Amino acid sequence: MDLTAAAYQATEGGPLDVNRDFYRAIANDNGRELVESLVLPIRSGIGWKIPAGHVCRITTIEGPQVADLNLWNASDPRERFWASRTKQLHAAHLTTFNRLWSTLPFLRPMATITADSLEDYGVDAQGGRVHDLLGTRCDPYVNRMLTGKDFDYHCHSNLVRAVLPYGLTEFDVHDVLNVFQCTGLNSDDQYFMKTCPAKKGDYFEFFAEFDLLAALSTCPGGDLSVPLWGPDARDPIDVCRPLGIEVFKPSQDLLAGWSEPIRAEYAGQHGLKAEKWS
Image (cartoon, rainbow, N blue to C red; front, side, top):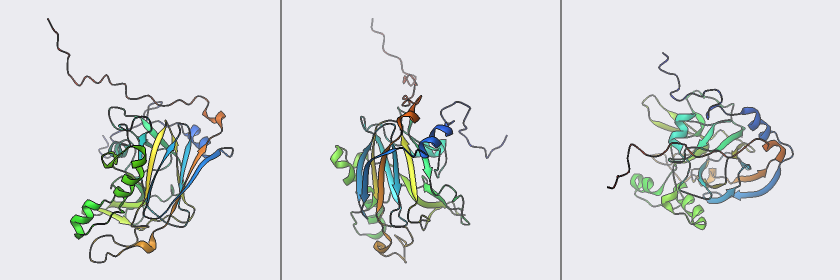
């Protein structure tokens, strides 16, 4: 028995066995139609909707910049991205053909990654990898705890502002996918962050498996080349850059045979039985 083998393994035709030919064709679609284009300024957050069967691309339009991504079911925000389970089902750092899964009791793929210009980054000399699920969003609460100061433009706050127009609140903001962020665990099993390896024009793209509400924050740490906390910390505003967001409608013939994933089929009884009244 290989004790280092993945705990959750794909079986042929199962939910973790992604149809790579289908998603590769979506990524290589030259006939897709641009339906929305946004520019997210530095230290900001924005929310937008991605219709089912559409593709969303996030691009480093001016150079390296880390982004924090949240996803919800556009019709029922109780269903949202589950970073922890996604990490178990796929990897702690995501790339092409990995999926972003939703919370219980829904448990289904929300999005599938179709293209990643950094997919060949692999593992660097320090053990760093990109598109991080190990950590989560920076927030003003930890910042206050570590520095004694308030700062209102951490990713958590950016995401809070981003979702307010959609009727959501701070309680709806959740653990993120850190797009373009390079992280790992050191020899003491401690979380570390490295300078973002993305260059101008790098991109991360995913396919919406059903109607999604997305929110994105341009991290106030920018490309993370400057420490945010500790003795060498300073305001890294000079390494902050905007990001581009595009939504595309694929050529409809490519969607033949595709359907939205159903929610988990577990009956939901949890070992409870209804009272029998006499």
